[in-house]
Length: 395
Image (cartoon, rainbow, N blue to C red):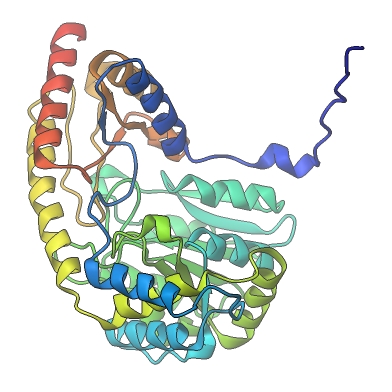
């Protein structure tokens, strides 16, 4: 007797969830590889370096010592203290361990902050183009997404005037991301200072995504949390994935006022329970141990940045500004006369180069592609050759 399957009835909120296209492209690229096609991966935003040996050793030793059980939902005390000390040192502000919440990756901080603060109908300002999960989470909780642009003619720095024009009495949260994914733009300190002053008397919070803060190539990182007038309104999102090549370890953290940290911890208790204890012990070593690997990785990314930007600027139909942070190039491809999705698909299927189309980061990303230069110089050069061959043949 044939079995029947009932229809899947989902909660309406599930229709509001978006996705992260990088993982979709990775699956498609791997399917091509399974068919024997060589693909150069410039789509995924993760360092191609191994996790530093001192961190790996600390994690392995932690497993052997028995750090394999539940820990506090907010994170192990020694890691919360290490994070507080690290942020205090790098930003020149005083952070207490009670203001730190450790999570399995950085995304939970994003999710928990939005769930905790945004009611249905509340407005949230976020960058467009920008990390797609911002928009996805705002919609998921029933918030109203209010995008602000990051334009090429401003070197992908924020336009403070645009943000201020879009603030209303319904604005509950402003999301910032510097260094920025996908453009590589970095917010200037003067712009941050002006924004901080304007937000000081507003009843809202700022979610400052600083996951790429140690990957800046000119100048120093600035955070809106450094400005006393908005310190209590600011939630810093950061983690270990990009700085220490620990994407698979799944460990991030948020820094926020202590009373909000308690509420975010409550959300963690109800969802993730806690972050793996042995990874947290490794995290302590990452923060308190040698930082030479961070410096070396940044210098290698600097070298790759030069190669990919110069190469893209020699390809017909492409122009590319130099990113000031992160490890992404965001070339303008309007000169090709084609949509960003069409070019990205063609480069994958016909040239064997995996990248992301600009609209994967929001509608205002049309006319751009994102290339991750978290790959070897040799592979980047090979990808550039393939792209140039494709443009010569098709444009």
